Figure 1 (cartoon, rainbow, N blue to C red):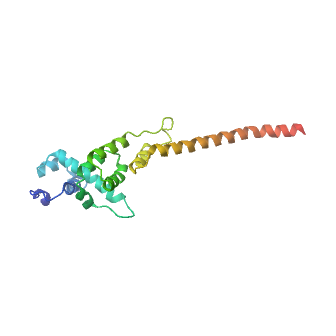
Figure 2 (figure 1 turned 90 degrees about the horizontal axis):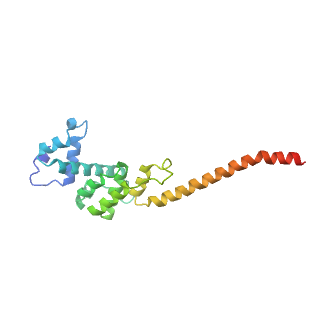
Figure 3 (figure 1 turned 30 degrees about the vertical axis):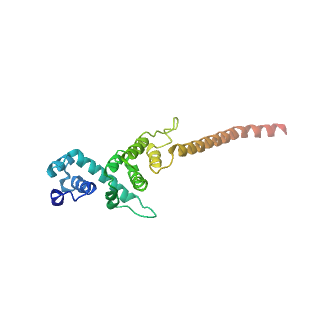
Length: 189
C-alpha cells in the first residue's frame, strides 16, 4: 500500500496499479475492501481504479490460461504496449473469452476501437435458430474469441446434425420394413 500511496511521480504503470488494487480488493485479502473505498484511500477517482482492476483481471486470465508455443505472457508485455484501456474493454466480454482476446490483442496490436468492435461482435453472437438447445452460447463465443468464424463452425455442426437425423430416419424406416419383409417372405413361399 505504501508503494501506491507514495507513487506521486507516477512510476507505476496503470496495470501495476490495477494489479495492486485487485489484490487489495479481492475477498479474503486485506479485508476485501470495495474498489470505491480503496480509491478513496489512495486519492484517485473510483472509475479509473475500477478500469484498472478490470484490466488486471483480464491480464491474470491471459497469464494463467494462455500457454503459447512460442512464448508466455506476463504483466510486462501488457505494460509495454500500454494496453490498459483495451484490457478494460475486453473485460466486458464473457470471462472464458478473456485469455484468447488478450492474447490476440497483444499479437495483433489492436486499438481501442478494434477491441470494442471485437467484444461487441462476441456479445452479439447467438446460436442458430432452431438449434438453441444444441449449441452452448459460451462455446460459440469462445470460438469467436480465438479468431475463428463461429458461423462456419455452426454450419458444419448443423450439417452433421442433419446427417445424423437422416441416418436415424433411415434406420427407423428399415426397422419398420423388417417385419413386413419377413411377413412377405413367409407367405410367398
